[in-house]
Amino acid sequence: MNTNVIPLGTAAALPTAGRHLSALALERKGRVLLFDCGEGTQYRLLHADLSRVRVDAIFITHLHGDHCYGLPGLLSTLALQQRDAPVTLVLPPGGRAMLEATPGGDPEGLPFPLRVREVDVDLSHTVVYETDEFSVEARPLAHRGFAMGFRFEEHERPGRFEPEQARALGVPEGPAFGRLQNGTPVTTADDTTVEPAQVTGPPRPGISVAYVTDTRPCDGGRALAADADLLYHDATFADDHQARARKTGHSTARQAATVAHDAGARRLLLGHVSARYADPAPLRQQARAVFPGAEVAEELRRYVLDPRDKEPKSSAG
Image (tube, rainbow, N blue to C red; front, side, top):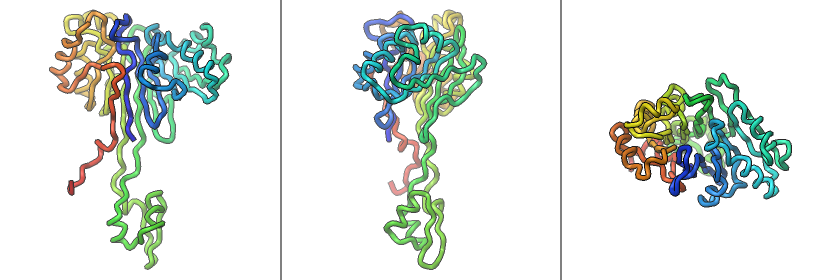
Protein backbone atom coordinates (compact mmCIF):
# COMPACT_ATOMS: atom_id res chain seq x y z
CA MET A 1 0.00 0.00 0.00
CA ASN A 2 1.57 3.26 -1.16
CA THR A 3 1.77 6.40 0.94
CA ASN A 4 1.39 9.76 -0.83
CA VAL A 5 3.00 12.93 0.51
CA ILE A 6 1.28 16.02 -0.89
CA PRO A 7 2.64 19.50 -0.10
CA LEU A 8 -0.33 21.85 0.08
CA GLY A 9 1.53 24.99 1.11
CA THR A 10 5.29 25.52 0.89
CA ALA A 11 5.69 29.27 1.45
CA ALA A 12 7.36 30.95 4.38
CA ALA A 13 5.38 33.61 6.27
CA LEU A 14 4.40 35.51 3.09
CA PRO A 15 2.29 33.62 0.54
CA THR A 16 2.94 34.25 -3.15
CA ALA A 17 1.01 33.57 -6.33
CA GLY A 18 2.72 30.20 -6.60
CA ARG A 19 3.23 29.22 -2.97
CA HIS A 20 0.68 28.98 -0.19
CA LEU A 21 0.96 28.93 3.58
CA SER A 22 2.25 25.87 5.39
CA ALA A 23 0.40 22.58 5.15
CA LEU A 24 1.30 19.06 4.09
CA ALA A 25 -1.04 16.11 3.60
CA LEU A 26 -0.10 12.46 4.00
CA GLU A 27 -2.54 10.14 2.24
CA ARG A 28 -2.68 6.44 3.09
CA LYS A 29 -5.43 3.90 2.41
CA GLY A 30 -7.85 6.67 1.54
CA ARG A 31 -7.35 8.54 4.83
CA VAL A 32 -5.44 11.79 5.40
CA LEU A 33 -3.12 13.12 8.07
CA LEU A 34 -2.59 16.88 7.93
CA PHE A 35 0.61 18.54 9.12
CA ASP A 36 0.12 22.25 9.81
CA CYS A 37 -2.91 24.20 8.67
CA GLY A 38 -2.02 27.65 7.41
CA GLU A 39 -4.65 30.04 6.12
CA GLY A 40 -6.39 28.61 3.06
CA THR A 41 -5.53 24.98 3.77
CA GLN A 42 -9.08 23.75 3.27
CA TYR A 43 -9.01 25.19 -0.27
CA ARG A 44 -5.72 23.45 -0.93
CA LEU A 45 -7.28 20.15 0.13
CA LEU A 46 -9.91 20.71 -2.56
CA HIS A 47 -7.27 21.56 -5.15
CA ALA A 48 -5.41 18.36 -4.24
CA ASP A 49 -8.62 16.32 -4.66
CA LEU A 50 -8.53 15.35 -1.00
CA SER A 51 -11.91 15.28 0.71
CA ARG A 52 -11.89 17.17 4.00
CA VAL A 53 -13.97 14.44 5.63
CA ARG A 54 -11.07 12.03 5.09
CA VAL A 55 -8.86 13.95 7.52
CA ASP A 56 -8.35 11.81 10.63
CA ALA A 57 -5.72 13.85 12.48
CA ILE A 58 -4.13 17.31 12.35
CA PHE A 59 -0.67 18.09 13.73
CA ILE A 60 0.33 21.71 14.38
CA THR A 61 4.03 22.49 14.75
CA HIS A 62 3.69 25.87 16.48
CA LEU A 63 1.36 28.80 16.88
CA HIS A 64 2.74 31.24 14.32
CA GLY A 65 -0.17 32.26 12.13
CA ASP A 66 1.19 30.92 8.85
CA HIS A 67 0.99 27.42 10.35
CA CYS A 68 -2.34 27.44 12.18
CA TYR A 69 -4.71 30.24 11.10
CA GLY A 70 -6.52 27.86 8.73
CA LEU A 71 -7.49 25.53 11.56
CA PRO A 72 -10.67 27.25 12.86
CA GLY A 73 -12.07 27.53 9.34
CA LEU A 74 -11.39 23.88 8.56
CA LEU A 75 -13.04 22.75 11.80
CA SER A 76 -16.07 24.96 11.08
CA THR A 77 -16.40 23.47 7.60
CA LEU A 78 -16.25 19.93 9.01
CA ALA A 79 -19.05 20.90 11.39
CA LEU A 80 -21.16 22.26 8.51
CA GLN A 81 -20.63 18.99 6.65
CA GLN A 82 -22.20 17.24 9.65
CA ARG A 83 -19.14 15.14 10.30
CA ASP A 84 -19.61 12.69 13.14
CA ALA A 85 -16.31 10.77 13.06
CA PRO A 86 -13.70 11.97 15.56
CA VAL A 87 -10.69 14.10 14.62
CA THR A 88 -7.45 14.01 16.60
CA LEU A 89 -5.74 17.38 16.98
CA VAL A 90 -2.15 17.57 18.26
CA LEU A 91 -1.24 21.06 19.43
CA PRO A 92 1.74 22.88 20.91
CA PRO A 93 1.45 24.51 24.36
CA GLY A 94 -1.24 27.21 24.30
CA GLY A 95 -3.04 25.65 21.35
CA ARG A 96 -6.21 24.74 23.18
CA ALA A 97 -6.58 28.26 24.60
CA MET A 98 -6.11 29.70 21.11
CA LEU A 99 -8.89 27.49 19.75
CA GLU A 100 -11.26 28.25 22.60
CA ALA A 101 -10.82 31.98 21.95
CA THR A 102 -11.61 31.64 18.23
CA PRO A 103 -15.18 31.68 16.90
CA GLY A 104 -15.98 28.23 15.55
CA GLY A 105 -12.88 26.67 17.03
CA ASP A 106 -13.93 25.75 20.56
CA PRO A 107 -13.75 21.93 20.76
CA GLU A 108 -16.79 21.85 23.05
CA GLY A 109 -18.96 23.57 20.45
CA LEU A 110 -18.33 21.13 17.59
CA PRO A 111 -20.83 18.40 16.64
CA PHE A 112 -18.08 15.77 16.25
CA PRO A 113 -15.54 14.54 18.82
CA LEU A 114 -12.35 16.60 18.67
CA ARG A 115 -9.66 14.73 20.56
CA VAL A 116 -7.21 17.43 21.54
CA ARG A 117 -3.72 16.53 22.70
CA GLU A 118 -1.64 19.50 23.81
CA VAL A 119 2.00 18.56 24.33
CA ASP A 120 4.04 19.73 27.31
CA VAL A 121 6.41 22.63 26.94
CA ASP A 122 9.25 20.38 28.15
CA LEU A 123 8.66 17.87 25.33
CA SER A 124 11.66 15.66 24.60
CA HIS A 125 10.07 13.08 22.33
CA THR A 126 6.81 11.20 22.45
CA VAL A 127 4.36 9.28 20.30
CA VAL A 128 1.39 11.62 19.84
CA TYR A 129 -0.78 9.44 17.59
CA GLU A 130 -0.86 5.72 16.92
CA THR A 131 -2.97 3.11 15.13
CA ASP A 132 -2.48 -0.61 14.58
CA GLU A 133 -0.46 0.20 11.46
CA PHE A 134 1.58 3.35 12.15
CA SER A 135 2.59 5.98 14.68
CA VAL A 136 3.42 9.69 14.67
CA GLU A 137 6.22 10.93 16.93
CA ALA A 138 6.92 14.53 17.98
CA ARG A 139 10.23 16.13 18.97
CA PRO A 140 11.14 19.73 19.80
CA LEU A 141 12.80 21.94 17.20
CA ALA A 142 14.87 25.14 17.43
CA HIS A 143 12.68 28.04 16.37
CA ARG A 144 11.67 31.31 18.05
CA GLY A 145 9.61 30.00 20.94
CA PHE A 146 8.21 26.48 21.10
CA ALA A 147 8.01 24.44 17.89
CA MET A 148 7.96 20.73 17.19
CA GLY A 149 8.45 18.45 14.23
CA PHE A 150 6.82 15.13 13.45
CA ARG A 151 7.73 11.71 12.10
CA PHE A 152 5.20 9.33 10.56
CA GLU A 153 6.32 5.70 10.64
CA GLU A 154 4.57 2.53 9.56
CA HIS A 155 5.00 -0.52 11.75
CA GLU A 156 6.94 -3.44 10.34
CA ARG A 157 4.86 -5.89 8.35
CA PRO A 158 5.25 -9.68 8.46
CA GLY A 159 7.66 -11.18 5.95
CA ARG A 160 6.43 -12.58 2.67
CA PHE A 161 5.05 -16.11 2.70
CA GLU A 162 7.35 -18.63 0.97
CA PRO A 163 5.16 -21.40 -0.47
CA GLU A 164 8.07 -23.53 -1.71
CA GLN A 165 9.51 -23.67 1.78
CA ALA A 166 6.10 -24.62 3.17
CA ARG A 167 5.77 -27.47 0.66
CA ALA A 168 9.26 -28.67 1.49
CA LEU A 169 8.21 -28.94 5.13
CA GLY A 170 5.19 -31.03 4.21
CA VAL A 171 2.48 -28.38 4.44
CA PRO A 172 -0.35 -29.10 1.97
CA GLU A 173 -1.65 -26.27 -0.16
CA GLY A 174 -5.00 -24.86 0.84
CA PRO A 175 -6.27 -23.68 4.23
CA ALA A 176 -2.97 -24.55 5.93
CA PHE A 177 -1.17 -21.99 3.77
CA GLY A 178 -3.70 -19.36 4.85
CA ARG A 179 -3.26 -20.17 8.53
CA LEU A 180 0.50 -19.81 8.28
CA GLN A 181 0.16 -16.48 6.50
CA ASN A 182 -2.12 -15.32 9.32
CA GLY A 183 0.49 -16.24 11.94
CA THR A 184 -0.95 -19.57 13.10
CA PRO A 185 1.20 -22.75 13.32
CA VAL A 186 0.00 -25.84 11.47
CA THR A 187 0.58 -29.56 11.97
CA THR A 188 1.57 -31.72 9.00
CA ALA A 189 0.48 -35.29 8.25
CA ASP A 190 3.54 -36.70 10.05
CA ASP A 191 2.61 -34.72 13.19
CA THR A 192 5.31 -32.07 12.71
CA THR A 193 4.47 -28.54 13.81
CA VAL A 194 5.43 -25.83 11.31
CA GLU A 195 5.75 -22.32 12.70
CA PRO A 196 4.99 -19.25 10.57
CA ALA A 197 8.56 -17.99 11.02
CA GLN A 198 9.81 -21.10 9.18
CA VAL A 199 7.97 -20.19 5.99
CA THR A 200 8.12 -16.41 5.90
CA GLY A 201 10.88 -14.01 4.98
CA PRO A 202 12.26 -11.29 7.24
CA PRO A 203 9.88 -8.56 8.49
CA ARG A 204 9.25 -5.88 5.89
CA PRO A 205 9.96 -2.29 6.92
CA GLY A 206 7.30 0.36 6.53
CA ILE A 207 7.46 3.89 5.18
CA SER A 208 8.73 6.81 7.28
CA VAL A 209 8.19 10.53 6.62
CA ALA A 210 9.67 13.43 8.62
CA TYR A 211 8.14 16.91 8.71
CA VAL A 212 10.76 19.33 10.03
CA THR A 213 9.96 22.96 9.42
CA ASP A 214 10.54 26.33 11.08
CA THR A 215 13.80 25.37 12.72
CA ARG A 216 17.51 25.81 12.71
CA PRO A 217 19.44 22.57 12.25
CA CYS A 218 19.03 20.79 15.59
CA ASP A 219 19.18 17.43 17.33
CA GLY A 220 15.40 17.04 17.30
CA GLY A 221 15.23 17.53 13.55
CA ARG A 222 18.08 15.12 12.91
CA ALA A 223 16.43 12.46 15.09
CA LEU A 224 13.14 12.81 13.20
CA ALA A 225 14.97 12.61 9.88
CA ALA A 226 17.03 9.50 10.71
CA ASP A 227 16.77 7.04 7.79
CA ALA A 228 13.49 8.65 6.69
CA ASP A 229 12.17 7.65 3.30
CA LEU A 230 11.21 11.29 2.77
CA LEU A 231 12.26 14.37 4.71
CA TYR A 232 10.41 17.67 4.28
CA HIS A 233 12.73 20.28 5.78
CA ASP A 234 12.73 24.04 6.31
CA ALA A 235 14.81 25.68 3.56
CA THR A 236 13.72 29.28 3.95
CA PHE A 237 16.94 30.91 2.78
CA ALA A 238 19.94 30.55 0.48
CA ASP A 239 23.53 30.72 1.67
CA ASP A 240 23.76 34.51 1.51
CA HIS A 241 21.10 34.81 4.23
CA GLN A 242 22.55 32.28 6.66
CA ALA A 243 22.86 34.88 9.42
CA ARG A 244 19.20 35.82 9.00
CA ALA A 245 18.24 32.15 9.08
CA ARG A 246 20.02 31.72 12.40
CA LYS A 247 18.46 34.88 13.86
CA THR A 248 14.90 33.98 12.83
CA GLY A 249 15.05 30.28 13.67
CA HIS A 250 15.15 28.89 10.15
CA SER A 251 17.49 26.90 7.91
CA THR A 252 19.20 27.43 4.60
CA ALA A 253 18.75 24.93 1.79
CA ARG A 254 22.34 23.76 2.25
CA GLN A 255 21.72 23.21 5.97
CA ALA A 256 18.59 21.21 5.19
CA ALA A 257 20.62 19.07 2.79
CA THR A 258 23.29 18.54 5.45
CA VAL A 259 20.64 17.32 7.90
CA ALA A 260 19.29 14.93 5.26
CA HIS A 261 22.76 13.65 4.40
CA ASP A 262 23.91 13.19 7.98
CA ALA A 263 20.63 11.56 9.04
CA GLY A 264 20.62 9.08 6.15
CA ALA A 265 17.32 10.29 4.66
CA ARG A 266 16.50 8.82 1.26
CA ARG A 267 14.67 11.80 -0.27
CA LEU A 268 14.64 15.50 0.59
CA LEU A 269 11.97 18.07 -0.16
CA LEU A 270 12.88 21.70 0.48
CA GLY A 271 10.01 23.72 1.88
CA HIS A 272 9.00 26.89 3.75
CA VAL A 273 10.55 28.92 0.93
CA SER A 274 10.96 32.67 1.38
CA ALA A 275 8.96 34.89 -0.96
CA ARG A 276 12.24 36.45 -2.13
CA TYR A 277 12.90 33.30 -4.22
CA ALA A 278 10.48 33.57 -7.13
CA ASP A 279 12.90 31.20 -8.82
CA PRO A 280 14.05 28.63 -6.23
CA ALA A 281 16.92 27.40 -8.42
CA PRO A 282 19.61 28.73 -6.02
CA LEU A 283 18.06 26.74 -3.17
CA ARG A 284 18.00 23.57 -5.24
CA GLN A 285 21.55 24.08 -6.50
CA GLN A 286 23.00 24.72 -3.04
CA ALA A 287 21.17 21.76 -1.53
CA ARG A 288 22.28 19.41 -4.30
CA ALA A 289 25.91 20.26 -3.60
CA VAL A 290 25.41 18.25 -0.39
CA PHE A 291 22.44 15.98 -1.17
CA PRO A 292 22.29 15.36 -4.94
CA GLY A 293 18.66 14.27 -5.04
CA ALA A 294 17.25 17.30 -3.22
CA GLU A 295 14.06 18.77 -4.70
CA VAL A 296 12.19 22.00 -4.04
CA ALA A 297 8.76 20.85 -2.92
CA GLU A 298 6.13 21.20 -5.64
CA GLU A 299 2.68 22.04 -4.32
CA LEU A 300 -0.13 19.55 -5.02
CA ARG A 301 2.28 16.98 -6.46
CA ARG A 302 1.88 13.47 -5.08
CA TYR A 303 5.23 12.12 -3.93
CA VAL A 304 4.58 8.37 -3.94
CA LEU A 305 6.34 6.15 -1.41
CA ASP A 306 6.04 2.42 -2.08
CA PRO A 307 7.14 0.14 0.79
CA ARG A 308 7.99 -2.58 -1.73
CA ASP A 309 10.94 -0.45 -2.84
CA LYS A 310 12.55 -1.16 0.55
CA GLU A 311 12.27 -4.95 0.33
CA PRO A 312 15.29 -7.07 -0.61
CA LYS A 313 15.36 -7.76 -4.32
CA SER A 314 14.80 -11.34 -5.34
CA SER A 315 17.91 -13.03 -6.72
CA ALA A 316 15.68 -14.64 -9.32
CA GLY A 317 14.89 -11.22 -10.78
